[in-house]
Length: 470
Image (cartoon, rainbow, N blue to C red):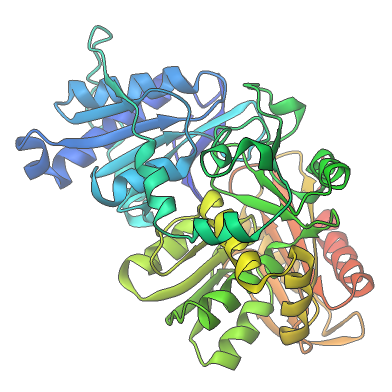
């Protein structure tokens, strides 16, 4: 089975293509990459690599094999002692380690696993992953099971980083009421408890369950019914949901309403500009909407859309002054933070915004829409019998488009990652085959739910008639 990196790392089905054999081949390629690119660090005997893992089936054993192979290649390597959220690995590569590897398949179904690679605090660039791919099978795997990796606990480094980025005193003294956290059985379990009194917290789905309660550990609205119920039951001020490896986030307000990524990102960006006085370029993935663009235009900041995958934003953050970056699946970063999505930092920053403005979550949502326009966003995923070529899909779908959709003129078409159709009203829809699963994702945003559903239905009709649904 071919080892290939997607939007964020290499993923596959356990025992089908994500096997110990393939993982060991990948580890050797990473070792060859390190030996070629970081010789001085290795010669000086420094700790060069750190390996972490989530709660998925066999994650710890995959991580142990990778750490062993790196050590057999004379690369100073630390294996973390327990499951951690991915931002722990990102934070450790910002200063202490040259490279980090995280065993996780993020939000994918339980039978998947994967490897994410982090360098300089964020996802490895496409150039880096292609170089690693080119090294696969160049050398035999140097693996002696008798070599044991050095194991340490280093997650306190991430906790200190978080405490340096938000005003925890203001949050704790200003905000009253409980916070409910849905860990979705993932490796972020326990992270919120490090910052608040147990009396203030209610946590659900905390046990170690490699099947994630028989759902994908993705904090989509349809997966958060229990979180909403707990918020209403306990009259909580906010609900926080983490994905399987703790880098993506969703928030639920005190009324039990889901805060879409499009609105959440607008609340964050508006605060960073108005209160933190941060300046720079604004980037979003193609699956995001019009609110950030409107903020950028009003404030006079450069704005650009990039393909899906936070690594594209991370690449920009390494070389430019990026004020803010956001993706639809719940990833956010800004100037002064790690160049990577970070669920816990996002949650803490939102709580700081609530404390600073002395407003509820629903009031913040209402305020940002009064300033920049109403936003109703919806997304649907359609399983296919098999994966499809994105270029083929885009070419065929473009031919099916009308010049006027939902009684509104088509203003612009973007086709660099799926097919995004933007109407003259700024409203839009996107059809995009997944890079990790045999699925077509369909997204839409408009000012009203009726219009959003109309755009979603139009996109669904094109996507599902071109290719057979599963």
